[in-house]
Amino acid sequence: MAETEIISNSGNNEQFFEGVEKLIEIWFTPAKNADLRKITRQQWDNVLKIVRCEIISFTQSEQVDAYVLSESSMFVSRRRWILKTCGTTTPLRCVRAVLGLARDVAGHARVHNVFYSRREFARPAAQLQPHDNFDSEVKLLDSYFGDGRAYIMGPEKDCWYLYTLLPLEGTVDALEKEHSDASEGRGLTEPDQTIEILMSDLDPAVMDIFTRQYSADAAQATKESGIDKIIPGMVIDDFLFDPCGYSMNGVAKDGCYMTIHITPERSCSYVSFESNVPVSSYNEVIARVLQAFRPAKFVLTVFATPDSPGASAARQLKKFPALGEYSPLESQHCRFSGYELQYGLYCKFPS
Ligand SMILES: C[S@+](CC[C@H](N)C(=O)[O-])C[C@H]1O[C@@H](n2cnc3c(N)ncnc32)[C@H](O)[C@@H]1O
Image 1: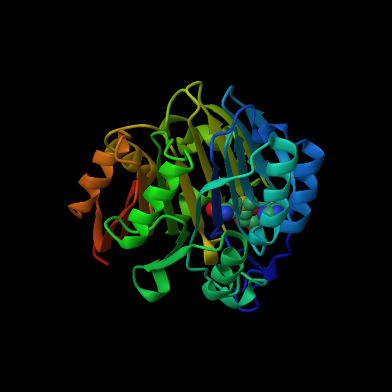
Image 2 (image 1 turned 120 degrees about the horizontal axis):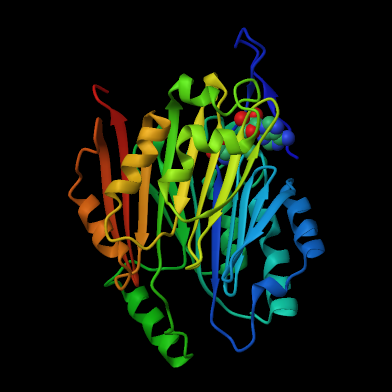
């Protein structure tokens, strides 16, 4: 597991923990009999050693294998791999190994799409290479994928970074991509949508729930915080760290997932929520998440293909609405070839 750093001036000997995750999602082009779930547990253990984290729990649905990690989560399905890790982990260092296993073990030789994203770290200088700056991350990603584009959204301290192979809609690159996808039979996509809510500065009373002092086990923390009500019908795999910290994965029968990670330490409190639940409005989910965690500030991102129910959710958020007691500070909308993206930064009123 990655090391944590003692905060010298916290006064209560509290440790600093970088809750902000690096999130990489790779989609492979559909191929006959190819399935990333052919990669064995031992092989994943070896991959995660490179990242400096380990598997601590596992659950699955018919469509997805969900791993809780010492630093966040990993989801493996037929052609999509998601790795989300926090602390000082190094997820981009394992991508070459994953591409090799995908080709040699799973039968996936072709990458269809890549999304790498993260919020700005609380302490960027504490990160290990290449994660100590976005330029280095992009350089390494380009060495794997060759042809990516990098974006930075929002104001400096609260910005959100994205690297993807998707070109912006209407550009020459987008037209070229459509042509090459069509000629190589790669036009096959499926509806996809993802919401992330990346929250900081959370209500200390809520954060106390995610300590061993307060909750006897993860199940108690899940229930008491209302996490079990955010998206009903999920099979929940939760873990309460000692002395504090919490991670959960939820999987549903229809193949969708949710994942929540909590760093409750007062000086660096952080919570992330992510799901691909196929709804046409995120209003209820967002309201439940904010009610459960009561952050002072959060970054909201929604990715959706035009044929997914989430496309209308992304457009609703584009109108830049206040969300309950939260006012919008920044908003950006991007149309990629095949995806819409909405980024928003929100702050509790008055800011
Ligand atoms: C893995 S969790 C969730 C991190 C997540 N990315 C988030 O959103 O905050 C991190 C929390 O668990 C605590 N923790 C306790 N033991 C840990 C361990 N062995 N490895 C990682 N985190 C641990 C950390 O101090 C921190 O509060």
